[in-house]
Image (cartoon, rainbow, N blue to C red; front, side, top):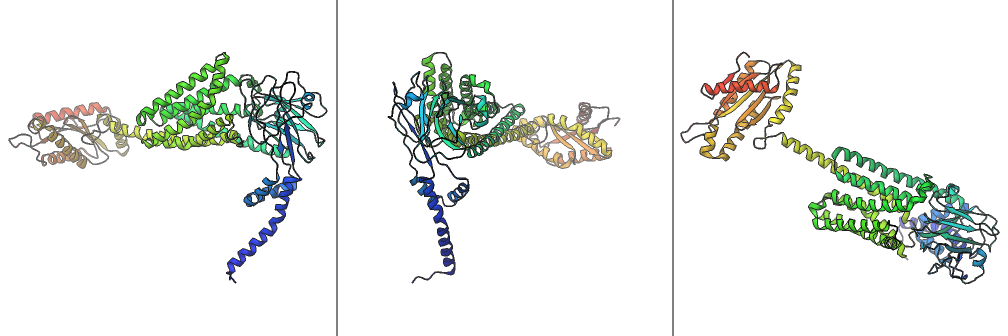
Length: 621
């Protein structure tokens, strides 16, 4: 007999106890899938012209059982899902929708018993028809639960639906643009309240009226009022948070645009604004949360304009942000060609010509799907070619483009089970906005570093590393102000290399450049801080000396002259060496920088006139 360790025995005891506790839950799940659920069958009925219908399936959960079920589904998902799935009988969708006869009524629909069932939890496309599409709903088994129920017609954002309840001759019409339905349509779907006294054999009849230019997919669900209100609150809160995040990113981009004057931020802000407007329209948020029902009459033209602008601005942002011209010039032409094609097709679709409008409708989703693949591919190639911002673009856009691509493919019947795709656009858009905002911030920091480096380079002499004349003019007056606060004096030293032209003529400019570097190094070492040392031009140097007395300034000047002479740099074949003539002048409060430099320059010329290689002070100082 196999011996078990104490730890193994304890684990086996816990496992046995867990299985024993799970048995009632499994039994309840099996009942939940059979006897305590209701299934709505949708029937497709033939009248004078063929009519088709759909069905709705929904499980009714008891209030005490729901929390336990959800807990076990999370902890024991592998064991609990199987019996529930096996117990439920899911109808199959009919392959086609048929038009409604102009004068047809629910009685006409009920007269024909031929129908096909389908799965109402899947998304199905409704073709356009002036009279709409009929749907008949009834229970497959069981009874209608005695709780407040709602019939939710999901994803029909631009359309309306009419519901005939048993015993009512007048239908109830609902649409997200209907202000009377705002209280129950926060998720962006028409909602109908069902009476609680429905008979088990009662049938419900729906007539769909799709939007003239939009034929979205439809998904039906029946759920308790409490569940719907809870789901609605979560949807509104999550969607609002995502929209607020994207709006904040757009405002940040506009701030960077004003500061940096970079068109990439403009394209990004335009794209985000278009994306926000487009999603608030297509999700119904504009009508059911913001209550802007007056926009319902212009959603067609606004949606087309915003779609064109969003795609074009996204492509232009990609090109500018990743510097595509530098890293992938051939691919840039492909992206620009896509922009032209997309704008041309959608622009023609706005013309009042039915054939062109039909062409735009047919081409829209394939073009969006192609763009969803093109943009990340272009970003990947740019990133592999050396553009670090291509990586940011790829990271931010892949989730959004994946959701966009899958949503576009739903019009062809693909991904019909993924009813969450529309809602996923909001967090995907917020994530994309956050990642690209980080990338734009990184770009802004990089541009700031480049600006500082360029500014620094513009203030430094490239040969000697000393500050140049521009930097001297910017830094001299602050130096004088600081010296005034401490009671010190400022002297300007103007130095010129003797016989420097002879050095260049005899030994070449490379030797002359090296001599300038050596002299600059000596000056930088001898002039004490916080003084300034500047290459003023050619072989001329200027220094600002902050001292307590004029004798200290003269000592520094003499030390500098002697140090340059000790370098023993030959200037001709006769063996003469490079020396320095220096003029010295005290800066007066009544003087500006140029006046003090000019006085020191005059003193330097006096030193030249008296034999070079000497220091002269400006008289009267």
